Amino acid sequence: MLHLHCTKKLLARIKAEIVAPGPSDTALGSWYATVIFWKPQIVLLVSERTLLPVLMPLAPAATLARRFPAQLALVLKEHGVPAEFITQEIWRMDTVQFSKTANRSVVGILNEFVRQAEFWLAAYAYEKGDDDDLLAISAKLAETPCSPLYKGPVSPDRALHELVKAGAQA
Image (cartoon, rainbow, N blue to C red; front, side, top):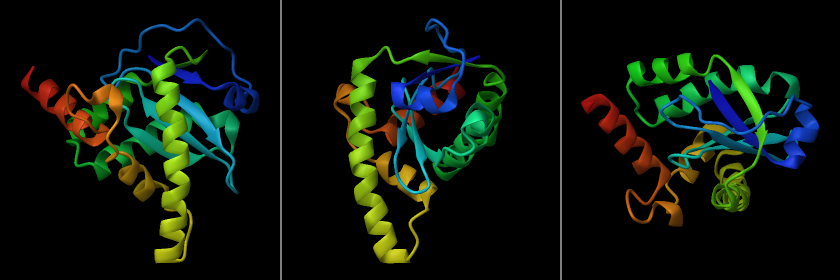
């Protein structure tokens, strides 16, 4: 089961049933999500455990929970995560429950990633002529040093690789 903690702006769009926050049984833990008002609108999701960012289209909003595991699989593959880890993570996401945000530190990271994503969107639009390379922007955001990770791997991509390595050794 996966707990998806959403900002008020996103909850208003997806109109999902809200439950009390609880633990996720996925390796990447609970996820936090917000909407970015680009055209088309985008959702930014961040793993609470590693701060790994995932960008994906919001529309259709009602199917966000069903579409997220597939987008996460693409992002994990982009980071070179082994197929076994990806399969297990996606399998554990069979049920998604929506909650309000509870961790202000992760909400702060969401807000910072939104600002950085806008920079990367402009950079990719300038370099490649298209503005929808969400997978590449997700990968660039994952290289960002994040203060909650300073005592360890420093950036979400490194935190992801440490988590995968620790899981493989367990």
